[in-house]
Image 1: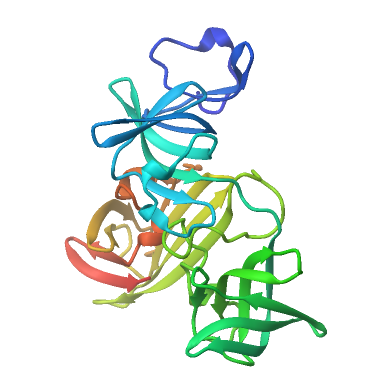
Image 2: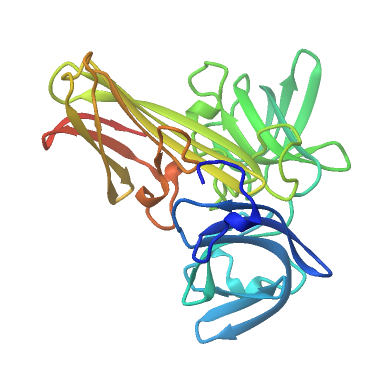
Length: 349
C-alpha cells in the first residue's frame, strides 16, 4: 500500500502480508500487518523446539505448535560450535532455541537456514597492539593486547578461534570474544591490521563470518541494541573496477548487516567517464556461479549507478532474486560491467 496506514477493512483475500506478532494464551496476537508488493513465499520463526521427528531423509521440528521440515541441505549453525552447516539436523534437541528462515510450498514449511542457541553473555570487542605472544610449537595459544596506553588484556586462542592474518608482537589487532569469570578473553575472532591503516576489518572482509566455518557469526558490532538473541554483524567491502577498454572508472560496494537475525544486504556499482546516455549491464560472480544483475543507464555526463537492496529503499532494486540460494553478498568474488556485450570494467573482492 505504498507505506500508507490502512485499516482492517483495507485487507483483501489473496493479499500477501507480513505479520509481526507474539504468542499469547488466546493465540497469535498481531502487533503490525504489512501488505507487501510481491510474494516471496518466505518465513522466519523463532522459538523453543517442542518436538522432533523424522520423515524419510528429513527432520521435522515443532515449535510454537508449527511443524517445519528440515531438508538435508538446510544450513544449520549452533552457537559456540563454529561448525557451520556441518551441524547435523539430528543434533537439534527439544528445548533448543532456534531461529529458522525458510519458504513454504504446498502448504508446508521448509527451512533454508537455522541458527540454534542464544548469544552467550559477556561478549566483548577490543583492539590494540600485541605486546606478547605465546605458542605451542607453531600454534598460538594466547596473546596480550595493549588497549589504550595502560590496559593489557589476555586473549586465549583455541582451535575454534578465527585468525585473520599473521599474529606477531607489535602488530595491531581487532579482537572479538567472550569475557570469562577470570576476566580473560576467549578469542572468537582475531583480525590483524596487515596494511597498517588502523582498521583490521578491511584486511579480512569475511572476518565477521556468516555462521559458517570458523567465522560462526560470533562478531558483535558493538552496543547492546537490536535483538539480544541474535548476532550483530556488519560487513562492508569496496573494490575498484579496472577498465578493460576505454577510460571509464568504476567501483563496486557490498554491505551485509545482521542485527538480531534481521538481515539487510546492499550491493551497488558506480561508473563515471563512460559514454553518455548509454546502457551498461552488470554480471556478478558468486564463486563459480555467475548472475546477471540487469542493466543501468548513464546520464549526460557519463555517470551511472545500479543499486540493489533487500530492504528495497527508494530507487533500489530488490537484491533477493539475484543472490544464489544458500549464498549472500559476502560470497561475491567478482564484478563485471559490459557495454553492448563487450567487457569494459572488472574487479574482484
